[in-house]
Image (cartoon, rainbow, N blue to C red; front, side, top):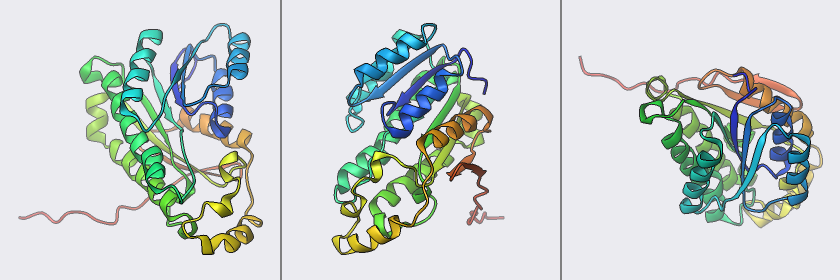
Length: 260
């Protein structure tokens, strides 16, 4: 997708990866940008507006655990921008001690945001189609025992997004879906990681493991995320690891048996 002249909705645009993704998107001369987040960075928002005078940029407060907030935000984005071409669901939480909140933010938030966005983007309902990008994780590609709750929520995101990319859905709505699975990235989400494990007895092991795991910078991760948005086909799943982009070929492990 050529991003020039497009309208983008970014959920979590003031976070570590999100902030850098927004900066990369603005370089593409997008027409409009709606940032949905719980807390606004007024200084950064003012800076973006000053440096990108040709782009309509606005912020809408959103508590991703509240469906009413999501509904209000998308309505506001439509009123401000007219329509939107790209949605990036990038709000996330890593803290396995907060079980319900982790599922609400990482999985239910993505599901509710996606289904609400489709109400405006679906060609069958008068929309223009477009692309929805859901940020999962490498922990959403395989079990991650030290963070079992987080891993479960992100696996749900990966599976949900792949399901939404069904060719049947795409032919109906004109909305494509891709999944982004970053590897370990140097953001605030990894702070005090040893206090966020599924079980406290894993704390020491977590400190040992994380002291050895290589991390990529947020700048590199953001740059590759935007590149994936520009080049991806519907249904693609990308692993972004240490500056490399790898499109994954996830096998189909089951097919239903049909009666003759």
